[in-house]
Length: 558
Picture 1 (cartoon, one colour):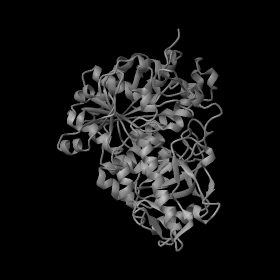
Picture 2 (tube, rainbow, N blue to C red):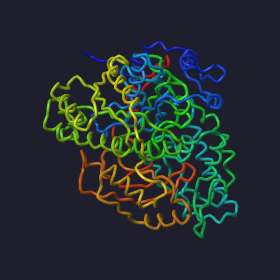
Picture 3 (cartoon, rainbow, N blue to C red):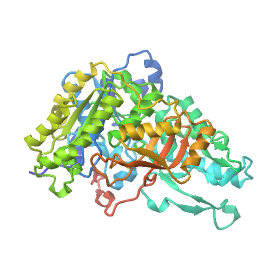
Picture 4 (cartoon, rainbow, N blue to C red):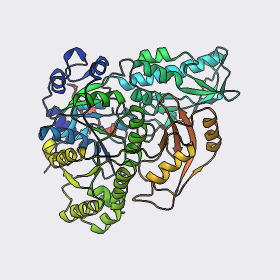
């Protein structure tokens, strides 16, 4: 039997006018700024007017360490939001916006899958409401103002060799990782080495996602460190007098975007840094707004729990004053067998031995969530047709040994109806007391925080600072940045910083090669291993399969 593609399912769905979706969420039309019939931005006045309303329950969806076999984290998030409505609960979901780089690179889309999607799927995966373009423009205006300042006399005494602010473009393009610009004559600027990040890696993205409003946004932008003077003092966007203009570019992008699921559950899709670069989830404003509008808010953090969930708890919840009520850890039999050493081509065959070998990856994520962060958890098994009863029972038995229940999720094929069991368990967990905790005290030293994340969450033996990182650590503490949270930039494919080490690696160290302050966002980025802030396209990019017909109908997104 053939299956419809994600985009075919999405295009066959009759969408409600976004005003109807807003009415379901309890949003008065006066707060809506329409982007066509199916999308709207929500005025920031809504949050001001709702500030005295109680919050609903906050549910984080995270996952095991990602594999090529697929886990289904976004699909589960969307399906759970729909499933909660199936059992009579007032729910919403809040997701990050997709980046064009992965859409045209390896993913082909990021709006869920099957019958658990946010729509309009094509719009969300492409330009949407233009937020990412605004972020890119703001990033590059700051870069232009910085280089212009140097060209026009360099009153601030900026050392061109110590500029930390990169240009940005929302596309995977390895050609832009390293370059020399400002060449071919004096009027073309001051020659220097430069580079591009993908837009979602820009600190502007993190700043937008973590801001509580326009004033906070402007203040955070002013604090962004763009480089250092010849005498090694930090230079900020505020020193360049750039904060006003950048905020003007971002004022509309700051407003959350309202869309819907296939089953018309209200959904905010807003912001979107990757979890190995920034905080990895939707904006604080979208989350807080949805918490006021719903009794149950389902949200998601990027990649596995060691990256996305850790940053959600240690950065977002800390900065925004949020307290999660439950965590869903998504896994699949196929992915766990991959962690157990099975090749992708053989994942459809029952293999209890490999499954048992791969299961510790899931169990370690569970333990991290429930014992380090102390948040109640449920495991959602994203069911595939090839999964056997024996394999499912093995996972259930092992999870129960940790006091965590397993719920089969069939939302890909059945929508919300396939997630009712999961929804009931989530509701039960939300009523449980929890003693939510962070992985580290933010007021300890940078090294102590690096060690806490590496040892408690990754289960590494130690942390080693290499190259310029020891000097950078000392400078950051000297500049007064030592009390900021840590954003670990690490491969998503392993608990370690080596992508090839699957399962639950032991006897390894985390190697930090660069420490950089994102003073506007409010954290220190620690680059580990070979993580890059500008990905490249694969040998066969998803873009080769994306097309549009004479009527404007898009195909190939998935």
